[in-house]
Amino acid sequence: MGQGQWILEPEHLMELNELDRALEERVAADDEPGMVEALIALGEGVRRLGVEVPEDVAVESDLVLPDTDVSLEEVRQLLRSTSEYYGLIPDSESDLAEGDEESAGL
Image (cartoon, rainbow, N blue to C red):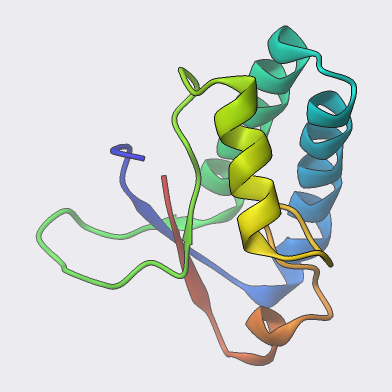
């Protein structure tokens, strides 16, 4: 949050899903330092794979990743609210992958 927005192609979701699964595993293990590392890696993956949306362009975000100062419990609640089928990033087979391109806000 507060770090900009990126356009992601559906084919990038497979790699981001791996990073998302690592985050979910750290949350399930009550490993807050590991969760922060996984969240940093997920944000870096979005920035590496995506194309940044210019600041002067207003677009609605389909996904919003929490900042790295988030608590373990806050991420746990966010994961519960997203879906029982995926973590913060929808699985590549989900509805998000059906569009031509989607944006993720960081």
